[in-house]
Length: 516
Image 1 (tube, rainbow, N blue to C red):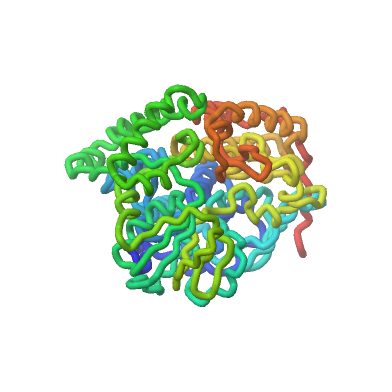
Image 2 (spheres, rainbow, N blue to C red; image 1 turned 90 degrees about the vertical axis):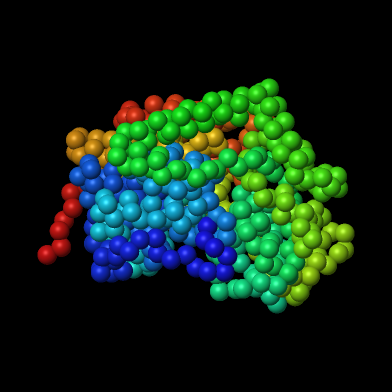
C-alpha cells in the first residue's frame, strides 16, 4: 500500500473527536465492531435510520484493512468506480485501480463527511461479548471498558487477522520477521537477504516493489497462481472534471464495471468452457514475460483459472527473473537462526523473513469471543459444521447479532462493497422491524440455517472454487466453501432487500430497571 521503508501518513487532516479514546457509552442501541468499509457503511446506514450506535475500533484510526496493509505496492484488484460506496462516488480517483493510501483516504473522507468519527471509540478492542438473556441485550467487555447494546454488528471483516504458519524453529530466527499486513517500515530492506513466504495477492504486489532494493530475495512458493495482465490506467483530468461537474456521469463507468464483472462471474460459477479463454490469456501473458523454461514450469498453475484468486500484475514475472531473485518450490521444513531450510536439505540464508501468507478467514479468532444465549461461543457453534450464517448475516442462538461480510458473502468476481451494502439494508430493516413490533430481539430459527447451509453447499459444488482442482483460502479444513457467495451479487441483493421475520424467533422485550 505505502512506499517501501516509510510509514503511510494519516489520509486526511480531519481530526478525530477529543473523546475518541474515552470509554464508550454505558448503553447503546447498536455496537458496531470495526471501522473499515463495513463499519463505516453501517454507521451511515444506522444514522440515516435514526438508530443510536457506536463503533468500536481496536486501532488508533479508522480504515480497517486499508489502514493496516501498508506494504509496498499494495492496491485493490477491483476497479475503484465499483470498490466504493454507491452513495459516495469519488470523482478524484487518480487511477482505475487505486492504491492503499488512496482507498484509506477515501474511507476517512467518507467518515468525516458523514460524521462517523463522532461515534468512533478508538483502542476499544472487543475482548468478550455475551448475550444476556435476562436483560435481553449484549454485554461487551472492551479494552476501553464495559458497555451494553441492544444489538451487535460485527464489521471486523475476513481479512483482519494475519495468518502465520507454524514453522518449526521460527522462534530461533535471529533476523527480523513480520507479516505483510503488519509491515515494518522501520526495517530498512536495502541490501538485505530477504525471504518471502507466499505467492498470493500480497506477495505479487510487494515482491516487485522491494526487489530493486534488497540484496537478495528468496521467494518460497507452495502453489503458483494464475496471473493476468493488469489493465489499470490513469483517469484523465477531463474525466475527473466531468465526474465533479456532473456526478451522475460516474454511474456509467460504475455500471459498466459492475455488469462486466457479473458476466465474468458466470464463467466462474459454471466452471465451464468460458474459462478456457481466460486460461489462454494467462498462458500468453506468462509465455511472453518468462522465456526461461525452467522458471516457466515452476510458475505455471495446474488448476483451472479462478479456483484460487486470480491475480493482476505486469511486473511480477519480470521481478522473478532478476539476478537477485530465486524462486524455491521445495517445502519449508524448518527455520534456523540465519536460514530457511527446505525438504531437499538446502539452507537458504536470510536475515529478514516476510510472511505473505494471508489471513484467518474461515477461522477468525473473534468467533471465540462471541457467546450466545446457550453459553456457546460462535466458534463452538461452527465447530464441525464450518462457519455459516443465514444470508451471511445471522446465526441461530445469537439474538440480535449481525455479521457484516460474514460467511459466504465474499465475492470472487466483483466488489465486496456491493455485498456489504446489501447486508446493511437487511440489518437496518431488521432493526426497524424490532422497533415497529416492540420485539426485543430476533433469533434465527435453526431449521432456516440448516436449509441455508444445504443450499450454499449445493450452489458451490459446481463452481470453479470447489471443483477447479485446487485448495484455497476460500475453503475450510473440510473442503467446504464457507467464504464466497456462489451466485451473482444481484441475487444476493434481491434476497436481502427486506428482513424476513418468519425466519426468526421473535423474543419479547425485557423491561429495563434504571439504576437509582
